[in-house]
Amino acid sequence: MTKMYDVLVIGAGPGGYTAAMKAAELGLKTGVIEKEKLGGICLNRGCIPTKALLHASSLFAMMRNCDEFGVSVEGMAFDFAKMQQCKKKAVQAYRGKVEEQFEKLGIDLIHGTAVIHRDKHVEVNSASGKESYSAENIIIATGASAKMPDIPGIDLEGVWNSDGILEAAVWNFDQITIVGGGVIGVEMATIFSNLYSAVTIIEQGSQLLGPMDHEVAKTLEEDLARKGIRIYCNASLKEIVKDNKNNLVCHFTQGEKQLFAHSRQVLMAVGRTPYMEGLFGEDVEFEVERGRLVTDEEFMTSQPGIYAIGDVSADIQLAHVAAAQGTYVVEKIARIPHSIHLSVVPGGMYARLPVVPSCIYTDPEIATVGITEEGARACGLRVICGSYSMEGNGKSIISHERGGFVRMLFDAYSKILVGAQIVCPRATDMISEMATAIAAGLTAGQLQMAMRAHPTYSEGIGMAIEDALRKF
Image (cartoon, rainbow, N blue to C red; front, side, top):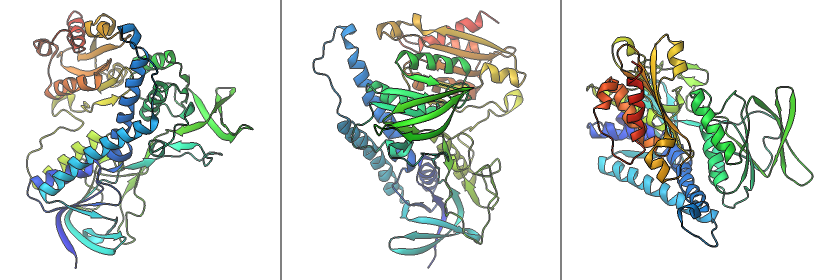
């Protein structure tokens, strides 16, 4: 017998579980199909475990330099196995909270692999057999999997993807080469550098962090280089081989130069690809473009009543984007007003202004939202830039932090905030104020009306606003 739902979600990552909880809160009969653990890649092998290891490794790095604060530590060391245990506890605690919400809201969690058939019929294959489900609305939230390039040596022992390396049980990373200088690559480089690893980054693009603001990328590269990390941009990996000492050697080119990077381990951090393996039956067809499910502005696929959210369809692969899209879709299904703006501010000349925060948990942290100065020029928008070096910030001086900055971009005519880039400790917390300001269409004058406590890193925001106001 086929069980019916108002909303059936495939995938229990941030997009999927957020959509399910929202649907259940609105009184819709909801089921979630997940072949692995509740929480998806982000909770179990991505965002949460990565940030847990970043936190642990940052504590160790901070203690290495604690003598300058008058604190002495003898016999300091790290235990990688215990770090992994701490990471697992964080994952379990977070997953437990999501499980509690599922039980409280009466959401059915269905374990197994989903196959979508015509007429919104879903077959689920599990260890106990096959079961059939149908729904008025289906939300595909299957996420993405780590990409592995097709190059010689990719299958050698010691070559990892970003999912697998987080599960390593034994410390064997005193030397590591990271292929890819995007968010995953630089965060992993930070973790291993904090733990005394010799780190090399090979990046195909002209800078780290791809389309990120050039000044932000430059600041990050300088900071990583200061930590001893070797960085090769405009570099292309050709093959990985073993040397006579059983170490891995990455052969790569940089322009006309033939270069080699020797290490015990290699991490492939070259991005993630939408996951749709075995998802569609032979009796149903979905439009796919560049490996992603195609959706309209309401996130509906080419099949009516079937939506796709998050990494399986979105250009921006971020957990909070997937969650926001899930909320948007459920509110559309329930026919209630939307509670969240996704990637645009409604109305007027700012109708295409992005309001998606991007956060990178390096040291110092990096956070951006809205458009960059280069982006403004590309779309013909004249902006006034207000900036402030965090070297003069009281909290930075107290904490012995080096460099960093706050940059804020305002439309030259309306003085409305259109973009912000922050490089300093707590930047990932501070960026939410900027996202709210952009979404609300606040001007420099309106932002300046709010006092910011002293001494805090947030004072840098006020100083950047003052710098912009002097230029109008």
